[in-house]
Image 1: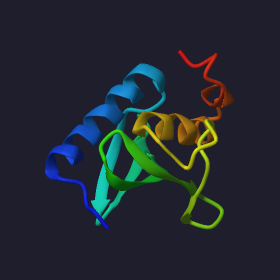
Image 2: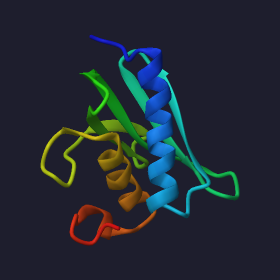
Image 3: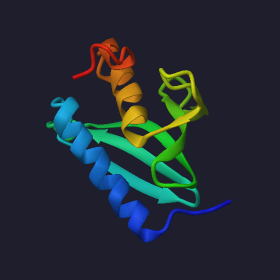
Amino acid sequence: MPTPPASTKTSLGQRLNARARERWPALARVDVRFRGQFAYIDGQLPDGEVLPLCRLRYGGSASRWGFAIYRASHDDYRDNYLPSGDTAGSPEEALDCACGLYLNDPTAWRPDTTP
């Protein structure tokens, strides 16, 4: 199981925070923490509340990651499909999918309506 190099870890955080600024103004920032091949993505609201969003699985490419949604009802992560129908995609696609659920904006799942 490959683990992401330091440069990929840094760029992942930068990419996700850039996407959050562009598409998700309800988030103050995105926090990323790593454990082995996994990156855990949390969104922070302006009041400091932290929302676990998703888990990404590194497979050797900085541009394509496996996706697991955070399930608040079970306090765990479950491999899932992105709106594209794939189980892996860009970090931005994963963030949009999770934020669409947790920030209640289903337009995130329809590419024709995502800004």
